[in-house]
Length: 600
Image 1 (tube, one colour):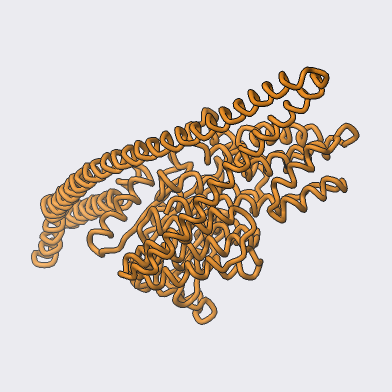
Image 2: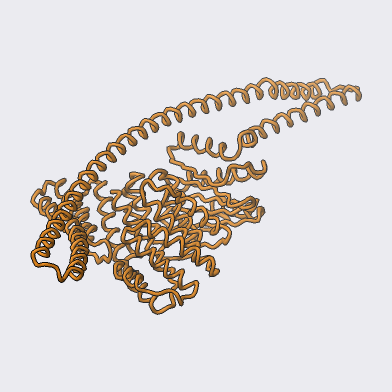
């Protein structure tokens, strides 16, 4: 289903373009209208006829920007790259920093879609990300995290999920419906194709579809239906998949129409074949081949037409130059030209056949490479699983050793002290020493033993509360805690960190650890959740964001008192002491998300 995913990401890119219109010039507005209607060839024709000598710097930037968009849609990636770069340069010259930075996103999308590209798309993503962080604009941060997530979707799905969640967090502030739809569409693809959770994919795709229908996004609706079909295919419900593919066939689209239709028919043929309806499977396979042949024939006709036009032009020039020559010589030359034309056409057709054979061979080689990569990934996953089991065994052995050490200290040291204290009191009670000096010595000795026992208990408590954090740090301590809970409670807990490489103050680490531990305890006691995600992000040297979400039953905030709210009041006061904020996002049946922002 990678083909569907790529179409979906490209659609989201075009949506963002449509929302960043700069043109005020009349001719540029007409060009933009052609692009908005999906007529990219017409837009390029108008652009090539436009004289920009009298344009302002901003209008020239718009001109090159529209050139880049149209070239990208017509698969002229090299021209699109040069035009994007020129537009960015002119926007910066005109002082349009926002527009220039938006082009960084376009460049990263363009380069990320190309195979074996020597230019690094992350260069442009990182530049935009730094700009978004400096501006502290929720809309820009949403776009930044969304693009990072999109680029990590194939090779790092868990990191992609983390960044999509961050994008949703900032878009909840920015409230951009188009971005909300694009993020949810891509989350649906991520859960379908990479995380193997089609039920979750259906949830996000259903949410995105509501926005696409309201905004009348024809292409997005079509691709959303196709991705719905992919979810049901993964779930083994081929009839439901066929139902959504029929909806996709009827959905209005304005670009890549023939390619999309051919893909829908291919997918329909596959689903009908799986349920044993070979008559319909054959029917849609024929439709797929018809569209595919039509696309190929269309490309061939364009190439042959261009070749014949070139030939006719050369022939007319030749006739004008030698009009007074002998008729016999002219006839012979015409015949020669006809032979040349036939040779050109034959050479062209031979080139098409050779190119098709090379493409077919390249496809086979690519499939073999993918299979080898998947085999290597499977071996790596097996090795990691074995290492995880070894780590868990070592951790449990260490815990047992630590408990044994504490038991020995309690029995040997603290136990003997308390026994001595007890004997001293019994001696005072039974013998009733009349010598004040002797009695005072017994009291002093008993007081020293009590103080020593107190310090011993305090030392053990200190080791239990902060020893692990002091020695290893906050992140390893949280990881060990979540691993223990996952083993004992059967609760799946995933943690994602960003910018947490440097240690915090020890007291701060202990307080954060205790807050997270208390929130996890609340989830275990009250939420009936099976999945918990912990996100720790350090935006800069003095600001930390903690987000903990679960898929539990949620609750109604208005129906509970904060005094009875599962320790939420004390948690809120703790965050206020750090100069931070404490936010709860929950509804009955939709899980709970708690967001804590701390100043460090």
